[in-house]
Structure formats: C-alpha cells, structure tokens
Amino acid sequence: MEAAELLRDTLVIDGHNDTIVAHIRRDNASICAPEDHLEERYVGTIAFPRRHAHVMSPPSPFQIDLHKMARVGIDAAFFAIDVTAAFHQRLVYALDGFGFLFHDLDLHHRPAIIVRRAQDIVRAKAEGKPAILLAIEHADATERSLNVLRSLYELGVRSIGLTHNISSQAADGCLEAREGVGLSRFGVQLVREMNRLGMVVDLAHVSPGAFFHALEISDRPVLFSHGNARHLCDHPRNLTDEQLRALAQNKGVIGLSFVPFFVDSVQPTLERWLDHVDHIVDVAGIDHVALGSDFDGGGTLLTDALQLVDVVRGLMSRGYDRPALTKILGENLLRVLFETIG
Image (tube, helix red, strand yellow):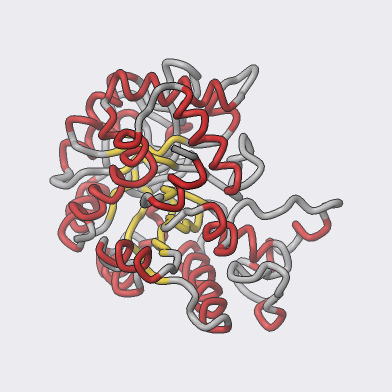
C-alpha cells in the first residue's frame, strides 16, 4: 500500500486551515489560482487594515489552496476565518472573507463545492472537486444574536469555534480560563441552537470549564478542530487525557494540528507528532482522531499540504493499517458531519 495511492483513493478531510485570510493578506491572491490577484478587492474589511504581509522577503509560500488539495488528495477542508482581532467588526470581517472566497470561486468557474450537507463531500469526491466547509473562529461573530447565527447558517457557515485564545461572550478562552467557569447563558443558547440548525460546535481554544460544560449541553458530537495531547506537550491549547476521554464519550473527534508548539516545546518533529496520534488513540480510541492541520495559520511542522504523504508514511510505519488510516484521514470526521450538519 503506497501513501500517495491511499490519499488518492480514500476520503481525506482537513479539520482546519486559515487560508482565506492568508490569501487576502498576500495581495488578495486567489485560492483557486494563487498566481492571480483579485485587485478590485484590495479595499475591504480584511484587505485594507491587514494588507501588509506582501512586504515579507521572500514571502512564504501558501500551505494549502485548491490546487494543492487536488494534487495531494485532500477532498474537503474547513476554511476558517478567525475574527478575534477584528474588534467591534467581527461579523463584517467574517462576511468580507467569505465574500472574497465566493467571488474567487465565481471568477474561476466554481471549481469547488461549498458544503451544506455531509453528502456534499461524498458528491464532491465523486465529481473530482474539492469541498469547502465554511467555519468561523470566535463566536462573537454572531454579535450575541441567534438571529445572526441563523443568517450565517443560511450563508453556508457550518462550524463555529466558541472562542479563540481569548474569551468570547459564549465562553472563556484557554488563555483566559477561570477555574470552574463554564459556558455563559448565551453560550448555552448558542450550542443548543447550533445543534438544532445543524452546525458543528468547535471547542478548539476553549477553557477546560467551557469544554466540559459544552459536552454536557450538546446533544450532538463536537469537534476539537486543531490541537494535540497535553500529556505530551503541556500547552493550554492541547487536551488533557480527561478531556480526550470525555470527547470520546461524546462521540466527537480531535483534529491533530501541525503547529510546532502544540507538538513539542523543545523539539517538534513529525515523529513527535506521530507520538501524539499514538497517545490519543490509546486514550480516546481510533474513532476519535482526525486531521486539523492549521495550514496558513501556524501549522508549519509541514512545509505545505503536499507533505501529507510523509504523514501517511509515518502512520504506516507506526503500524496503522488501511482501515485505521481511513478513519484518521477522513472517515471519523465525516461521521461527525453526518451526525451534526446532516
């Protein structure tokens, strides 16, 4: 069994990237064709205040785009917009980013499918098109309104992270965690309404108190989209064994991240990342492990998405057979999507 062949044949889903904002910050580079630049989009809520990354010399290459997804065999990915830095304009910031993506897709004749139901991912693979799941990091993009949440759902947003590292009106962030504090009243309402509408509740970045409270409230599996095992790397963004066991009981999944300082504080390597996979499988079980790269947002343990072949080779070297690899690469996350977004 060859790694490249497996990636082509099986369904592969990446639980998190930040590529929309990364492309906007680099002179509005197209996600469909990065050599193209959408010049008429230079003035926008994201482009105008954040258009400075183009001065980097030399600029770092994009880690993921539609071309790289097709080349390596990533069939679907969560394209997230982190609105944390957009104080007082978080909703507009998210809408600006999604509008850029929609315009980009239109200019290039709709080369990807926006996922509204889990079956769309299966259909996209059959049609040879990449699938995009729209996601938001930081629940304050809802402006504390369930009506705004409903509007985002109708737009196509299918996943929202309750916080980023800092707190939101829904919950404490992992860097502002208060002992024994769970979801706010609005956070409880938000999780319940996301369950009702059919949206993924993403618990990456939340405090431990908010994490456990959300599991109590949610009647659907949750996603921890990008993070690793705290037992191996003591970082607030990683999950403890107690959290991993609770996630498994919820039937949720964790997407393992390629952010170096979530892997090891001294010597982050692919082998150490594989240690995280082994540990989480031992604690939570093979059915609860997925990919959550954080490409274009700090997931620099890999050069780019094309290096996913090395990840699969590494997993094979650790003894993971084809059924196990299929679960890690996409089947586990697809199950959660069928149970959440329908």
